[in-house]
Image 1: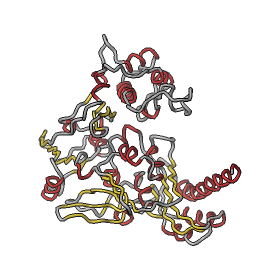
Image 2: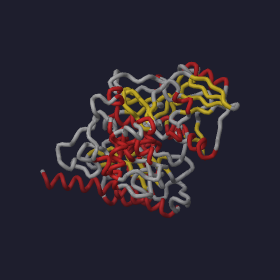
Image 3: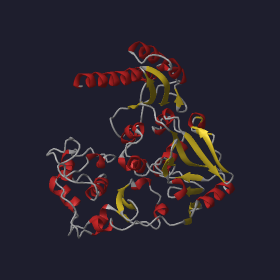
Image 4: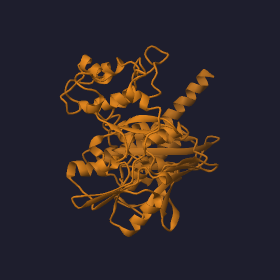
Length: 436
């Protein structure tokens, strides 16, 4: 499904989302297009025609998702044919089509090649195309809503104050942003909430500000929006985001929601722990800041009170000079982490002056690798230090065995990750010397 979203002050963009995770009342007041709305049997949309011609139409179960994702990329404002014939990248087509736009749509019928061929055969939208023309006007925001269906109530408050009053009066309310976690429970397990409160479009939760000593990221910004607005200014997050689920999920999932679920395998938490982030919690009593390392109190539990919302995440400046995010999973993209490790180190004259390491998937909560950090600080950044610290890192947390990985494998991946970080940096330094 395509949802018209903001793209600057006076423009819009067609954003693909997983329709199976979207609550229908959350779309009230918005403009949407489904696969059926793109064209008709008598007048196929260019994407539909290209898929048919390439033999990319599948059994029908996953085809609508491919069609909508491909249409969103077809209309993407920044899509232009690359200067190099092959695009300079095997995952981009000669028409500027980014294959990652299709991620999250899975098919095991006839394979992906005809789908890729259909994507690479697309031209540019006709100027008279109504969906292309619609991008040059602002998108409507979601309308406030208060609906009751079969005894369950859905509320999209008009503002933050109304939301906080509701949470104060209804402590059992379920707070929803992108619904990429809770939506699975609704869709697959039939879960329902007596009261669901939608907060994803509250303006007070959607700011992004650069200050002298901190970057503040609104909790209701999606991962895709954060990636676009930061534009690489936080390298660790720039490395994390493309590995976070699929683009379809990132178009809905929020940074506050990822922290709010308190999942021990959420990918955002290790990176934010390494960045020494703080969580801003807000209620009718005002704001309070909590160090992210102190925010998680147990398995899927946090210090956030029922009358509080996560308003923002604050990342202190300056940023560390050496950062990296390592995600160990069975697939390169669109998979749940077996282990996630984030590094943020400061070096001065070849000595480690500060170290922060965030871990996910090795305990009941995301955590800092405190013992390893202390083993690194004050030591020379050399292979002897790294090997000694790697042995400590392998013993951090309380990894367990499950269907994704064994405890021994997780411990091994932890210890190897620091060696990998050092090897990548040392190799880069050697190449710099050779080319100088």
